[in-house]
Amino acid sequence: MTEATLTRSVPDVLAPGRLFIGGEWQDAESGKTFEVIDPARAEVVTEVAEADAADIDRAVRAAREAFEGNWHKTTPRQRGRLLWKLAERLEERKDEIALVETLNNGKPLFESGIDVAMTIQTFEYYAGWATKIEGETIPVSVPFQFNYTLREPIGVVGAIVPWNFPLNLASWKVAPALAAGCTVVLKPATETPLTALLLADAAAEVGFPPGVLNVVPGQGRTAGEALVAHPGVDKIAFTGSTAVGQHIARVAVDTVKRVSLELGGKSPNIVFADADLPVAAKGALNGIFYGKGEVCAAGSRLLVEESAHEQLVGMVAEGADGMKVGDPLEKGTRIGAVVSEQQMETVLGYIRKGVEEGARVVAGGGRADIEPGYFVKPTVFDDVTSDMTIAREEIFGPVLATLTFDGVEEAIELANDSMYGLAAAVWTSDVKKAHYVASRLKAGTVWINTYNLYDPASPFGGYKESGYGRDLGRHALEGYTQVKSVWVNLR
Ligand code: NAD
Image (cartoon, helix red, strand yellow):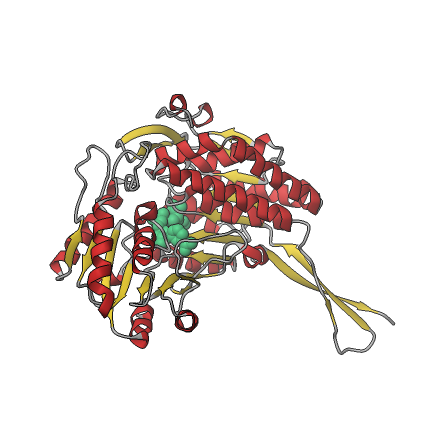
């Protein structure tokens, strides 16, 4: 990206941002708008129309009309080609989109670039799937009957996503849903609506029919809840906190909607003494501090074998101290701004709680001295025990809790001692131990000698209270389809 393009302003289509419904940019029926904040400057970037129940209703009706109309009739090949074209358009606009993501979320520009690249890959991946959604022939035991299945799109999907990977997590829902033949109403997080609107803009540019993808920024309690309760929505695909996910599942039950929930985590990063310790230390730093720790799968619990404890914690603390915190647009910045003032206060509250409960700060430990944005120093706690708040609750910020174990069984027990089960990692040079531990961990993703790797082909989702259903891979695609069994009398 050239220096000239690095201005702190948004493209015209976002100034102000409007709702994208039925292929048109529209104001909210109430006329309300809300301010979008750049957390690195604590200043308003732009304003965006604020959807509430009436707008959600319009968007759902547009999505329904598109589903029953043109979109339903498109061939798999046409859907695949549109998804591929969208990927190509995002590639052409990637610098602009990455800049907007950073201005809105506060993450370093290189991370936003990775988000956009992953979004492009996700659309490419599901473009390929559009022509490969097949039914089966079933060998039933009833004489003279032929039975087969059709795998059909579920219908209108309400996608609700959080603020940590605003565009990328939207693509994890939108791409498989559209490939399957569904239509979508996407509600981005209140804090970060901008790149979802750019996605709508790019989709319109490449010729998606009106109503296939609608984007409706707004508050969770109004717009989000109206989407979940709407009888015209067939499935809610949600990523966010466990508390909101529980609430959504309760509301969705009234209309027997399908629901997939990708929720919070408190993922263990287990380092055995026989690991390559410098590599594991880097992995621990990446595991917790990538995305400012605002990552559902963040390795927020570092479990270290006793004999390697001192050496590893020393390396991790030194690494944390060496990370550049600051302007996310500046080269070399590793830790950008926390997404909002409220989230910064939450994170600082957890740091205070850790100290009060007897854990020891070995790096960071508070707000970074950079005003007026919302910056927290990468913080490492040692001497944490499993009963402490910072070992149990999701902080969703740059705060690492280090615990110590003795032997394989204690490591597994500690790792599984959580209501969450999103991800985990094992660092060891012993192949048998690595696979044994992976088989015993209650987590939807296990990394061995690595961390934070994702690919559109590999399913991602939770065990336990980290949710159900899967994003990515064939598994996600199936979640946007339903199966019809057809019987044919051959006599
Ligand atoms: P959140 O649950 O507060 O909000 C998520 C989305 O839900 C937002 O769009 C919000 O507006 C909406 N929402 C809020 N209340 C609602 C309601 N009553 N009805 C309908 N929608 C409502 O989460 P957040 O603070 O934006 O994001 C952080 C959380 O997301 C963390 O817990 C994190 O672990 C989780 N997360 C999970 C994954 C995953 O894949 N498992 C990925 C990223 C983030």
